[in-house]
Amino acid sequence: MSGRIETAITSYTADTSIWTRTTWWCSVLAAALALSVTVASSAGPVDISYVSIAAIVADSVTAQLSRFGAPATSLFNGPSHYETIVVDVRLPRVAVAAVVGFALGASGAVMQGFFRNPMADPTIVGISSGAAVGAVAVIVYGLTISIQLAAFTGALAAAFTVYWLATENGRTGVATLLLAGIAVQMFLGAVVSYLIYTSDDESLRTAVYWTMGYLVHRDWSHVSSSLPVVALGFGVLMVYARDLNVLVLGEEDAATLGVDPQHTKRVLLAVTSVVTAAAVAVAGVIGFVGLIVPHAMRLIVGPDHRILVPTSAFAGAVFLVTADASARLLLQGDALPVGIVTALVGVPFFLYLLRRREVVRL
Image 1: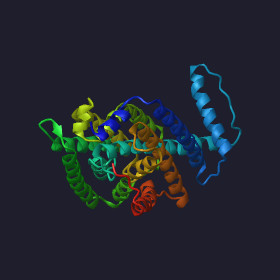
Image 2: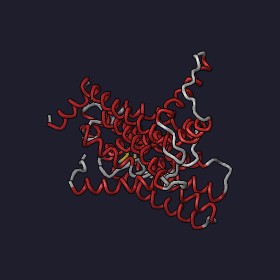
Image 3: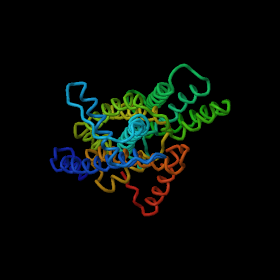
Image 4: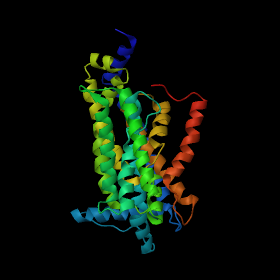
């Protein structure tokens, strides 16, 4: 038996040490996320201390628990409008950034393993382009459907169109899927360009902002609509993390180890598409999170997807929350689309990895 398959068997077999490492790294990244959320919630024209942020959040949590009979406490004694700023304005935006970053980080790690290509990202099968068509169409033509629902529907339609085009006789070739994704992205990009070209000045600004990744005016409804989808999808991806470890070696080796390659690919593609669509629908097109974050975490924790997927998810959340806070601070009184910040950071970092030959070959 080849050394590659022996290595795969070792990875596929239950290993308690990997779960210990996963728990440790996720705990560290969760703490970093909590810190970044606190810092981001205090950033803005109104200076609110970290202690006040923590007290306001604690009061909000106990207020919700009091509905179930828990005693309500009040730790914050400052101005009442501080609570409105934190709970109704800043925290929803930060929470959306965390959910979206979490989704893109996890999906990016899965897609790079799925395609066995370090250049892959969650939008490679046309998800972002499909979402952009749906959202921009609503913006330009003033359709009655919500932008979020239109973007989500367009994203899934694009992803499953790519899958249909790449599937023949029940088999989906990775190379064919990649080429179909590129073709569909180019076509949908042309559609978006046409929609923007025919838009008026008011809708043009909104459409362009959306395609850059825009987290302004996010509220708790955006969190409640995306978080359950992302959480459920992430759970499914973790279940298939071991199978993805084997699938990376090739379909023949995967079949030898008892993994059904076609079924695994269908599940991974479908779930990743849904998770990414939920993220793009509430935040617009945000690049480089799903490309750069898995690279960075692979260099730190290794290629095992049982640890790479969850750590990439938490690291993606930290990265996007931090990037969004930076976007707010760079232009005081204005709103810089967060996609600009992620590109400004992501491109130099990726070029640095290329220069040092540290882009990991899968």
